Length: 336
Image (tube, rainbow, N blue to C red):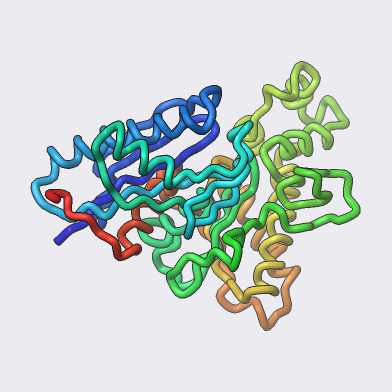
């Protein structure tokens, strides 16, 4: 009998929710701004209301099937066994929050819905989503890297999510690339995220500008207000042949390649799925990353090296948390 689940992606800007069919994927989805100002209690109310609305709609739409539960992907350190979210970076003012228990209590008392709930790190959820429905489907072992405001990662080994003993495995963004460098993020010097996070990519490009004639478009943008420049501007400029933008993306890809080479040397993982908003630059990043990956690994490690784009876009998180519900082995009948 087919299963369905509710997948939720809790972000600092938006909360996305979807009803996902185990075989067909997303049936319908919704998104709303995250009410950060209301704190954990207010956000839990949002999550409960979204989950309840999606459950009711799915129950009316689906005649039969097994409801596998509700999965929530959240930023920050997640204890998936106890359902605790700790100090999420995009949710200011949050400390250690027993998110699973708080959400279960709210659903039961305010909406009369009793359901199994799991909490997972958002990058791990995205990796699992790509493993089941997306770019990692053909791989038995791979690492997903998300390039966006920060740099995140999730590890799939033997088609299972690897969390590590304390639940923080895969945090490639905090891998040290330049321990004596000037870039610092979250108090740590020279991390991958401090070098190729969204803000740093723009600063990198602006720092390469010297001759106004070489790149007049970027020069003017950097002079007026660098904060208004986005990686999308750099992507467009590079596609038009802008030499500074091309050099910037070359540098980003090269730095990423160094990080991936460390993963190859440490874990013998040779397949990488790259997603996130920055990954829209495609081969502008992938080509130099693969070249550096070969340069920074031994010839004996080159066989099978591959970098592929993620396929699910911003739905990877909701697909992944739903898929984790299907794999949890604790179904709840939708007609119970």
